[in-house]
Length: 460
Image (tube, rainbow, N blue to C red):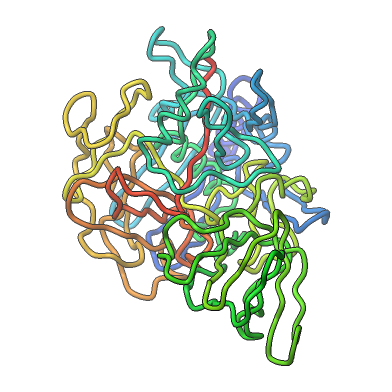
């Protein structure tokens, strides 16, 4: 038998052994060039992944793949809706001119278990992690929720969000926390492998082309109504179904609005007169004065019920509407998400593994320091740092200008001082948003209308 035949036989045997006795390996490879498209490797070779709009069918080979086919929706005893992700292992390699990501249900050599699948009290692996299907909202008893048909919580800070999440750990319940670096790493890796690109917005744009501008002003007063009258030029920026807030004329754009959480139900151009647009919204009637202004806010939870595919968006994939990833609404864009387990001081990241120990502005044990320092310039991400001891924590170390379609295709915000981590971007981020967009400019105390969170639950 020729050497070529022996090699082919070995490849076939190895593949069959993985299929029969062990978990498959799905992987992607990147040459670290400008092109964000990745090469599929291992058992992902030949696979494709499409997304759908509304009720359209989308052919996605990963719907029947290990790990992915086991992802599904569950509801806890409190009524919170989660997407359950089964335990899996990750391997990353990073060197000069190459970077790889691999996932498997089997812990092959070099693969690590994301810490979201670990019980620190018993030192045992967990079979799954429950990720909030919806952006976090605030319920009775100041408990962070994951429920549909409500507007997400905003205008709070990471410390409060942490408290609201852990308030669920009462009455014999345990394992509740807010989104953290380990869940982000797990989800980010799943998406990168599935879609084989670092430019997730080339697949799903997400709600990233909304409005966040104090110039969207009322040009006529409305008393005891559900409308705001703006110019036609302003009205053209909005769509039916989007969420808006109304701010008083002298208010700050990032602060608490006069009216938060209203859904646009109708847009009438040249009404009540030529050059004016009347935007109608739901909810209680309000008074709107001339020069009060409107802007978009995060989408109301529950939109994914309109999407038939495992991943996709509603209405149009144009940045005006949100997306869903395997049941998880708005994994990026729509609203910045607080990421716990990460503290930064002068661009040096410290991470924590155990959610019980999460606290802001801690730069000592149980937090641990990464072996690299983040880039000191705000711009588009060219390269991520890689610490082999903490492969789950990847933050920008090199940036470029005009990188919307190059390398990681996402922006990066940074500043000196003590900072927290925000992930994914929000409704006004445009093509800067995505799976590598880290906002590292906020301290732990500020809040804003664009900042939110997500509930997690470990099976403890």
